[in-house]
Length: 272
Length: 338
Image (cartoon, rainbow over all chains, first blue to last red; front, side, top):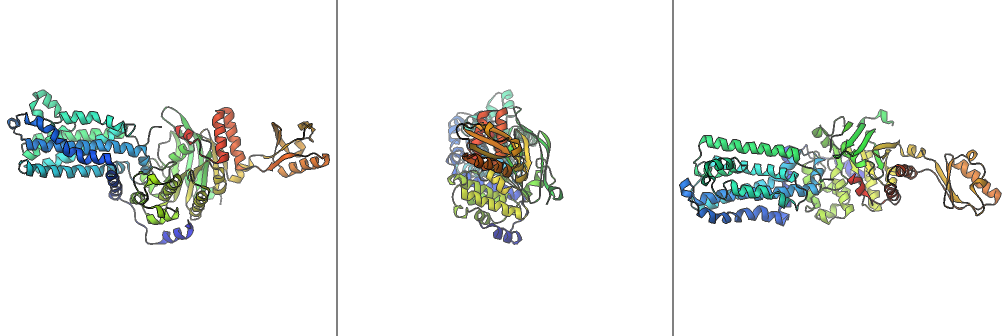
């Protein structure tokens, strides 16, 4: 530790870097978080493998539904199920345990002593899994188009909107759930209700149209339903402008609610 | 230079902190730290050191009072303060699966005006450990990594919460040299410690916290001067304290017996010692286990801990006592749970 000489030399030297920017900070955090994601075996399984395997579990049930009567096909249903599971597992479930783990390791507290804002810290942590989910959605889209013969998406802008809104919503709800979770182990329990209810009711496992109208109308208002609907009908191009607007507005409302819950309940330090 | 002439980099006025559940950890603290000064917060466990320093770092909103760091509120004006401060928390807070170099790179990406990562790692002696994961570092190495990252942005103000806990004697000396070198270049340092030696050697000024309040503050010499010096010895069998010459004229302000030991407190050590030894020589009395010592920070600290023990939990005070004497971080839990 020969301090004075080294520091004096550097203080005047040209090697110092400039002021950080939000984008730069976000990138630095996301890069570290991506490294951590790849080094965590259970996160790799949850985030990378489960979303690609689970769609096969709903396949059998879909075959028993008269999809054609609703203008749907097995391929499109498999696609929206796959993208839905990606949002639920790669984004939501992974983030709940990641946020809790970073909090319990005091990483969040330490980061808050630095220049990154709260939003940047949460965003940087979420960025890798959001990227993973978008990549999975793309992969699923290509695979379904090629293998299940569903043609090309008719309204790709709605499809993209659905993928992005759904992933953001799952990230916000993941952070909110983490705020209510004490330990990494218990995150597997606290994330279950949303995973289970959403998988069953959002139109991923079966189209909500097969339910009675009034029940279907309620199910369509649940958090992830609008995103799934945008993905499915965006591919098919069967959505009217009014339906699309309603879906987007509903999704945005849930995202706003999720962000409010994060502000209200997110914890930056372990409980004392 | 007097504090009043310097730029006040840290200003704390009547600061209070209350935790959920109503526990009042900080109960009205005021002090200021000038530019280029090292200020130490000392205290027994649970005295409120960490609770205070976290408010200065802007980690929480005070329940009352005011904090200004570089003229800004560190909690509400985070963006203005953070680029100019470096913080070392009491406990790490780095992902255990990242290597030292990856951690430093992440931190550098969030820090303005950084020095090269390799340079700060070199500074704390961790350059050779760059590719080791944080979870494989020793406690002392983690402490040094934390220090390295606090220094990365060459901050004007440095907050160090127990910076040398877990370091061996050599590592501690190296850290002190480093902190002094930073101070000499104008960095303002606020540190907490429960090593009395650390505060005595390093701090320009210090405050001893007790029960969420400042019990005493000033330069180490000033704080020490508030305490009497001590002479202790064993009287031979058959002699009683009453057989000594009158104590007050010798300069003794207080005395007490502890088992066979007689302990005299004085503010005029030389005069009292001379009188005592002259008496012993004249009477042919042998004073066994004779111990003459000037007041030290340790005495001051232990007195305050003892006063705490009288009013609060004796066991906790005793633990703090041992803690301070042996310089071990046995009961840090107490402070964290508090």
